Image (cartoon, rainbow, N blue to C red; front, side, top):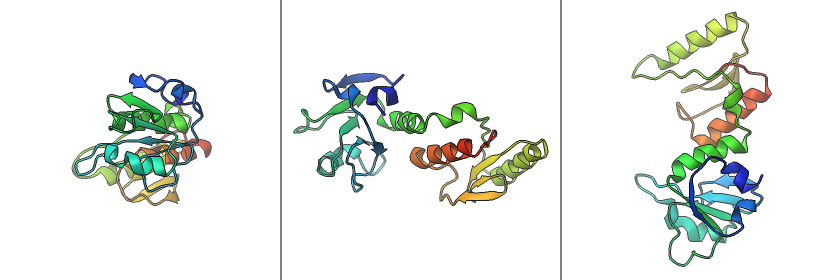
Length: 176
């Protein structure tokens, strides 16, 4: 998919010449992966800064860097500068999977206690109303009552979340 399509609607403050026309085969935030043909997103976290791993990402074949700043020595490497790589990452993954949430009714349950119980009650109500449901939570991801896959987080990170939503959409789910 063309990088400009993945970045549609994202504010880009700077980029290498011609980089938006690059064909991107994947996205990654992990410099330990094979990054051949992929965009490497430099996420900044509490303990790690993806910008510190640009050298490793380049060694692993990253096609383009998506970052807040380009570290010294990598100014000529294909890059896109964005205000928030973390926010951009979520949009990239959504676009990469064809924006699956756009065609799903997504209900979110928040709070301290009772989220799992509440989400299962909502799923039951929707199921009784004849809707094909998906559920993502602490106990995993499900299509109707069938496990889709185990998730180790209540809300998975964008790569896993949008993959799950894509699978649900493909399976005919209407409500998540």
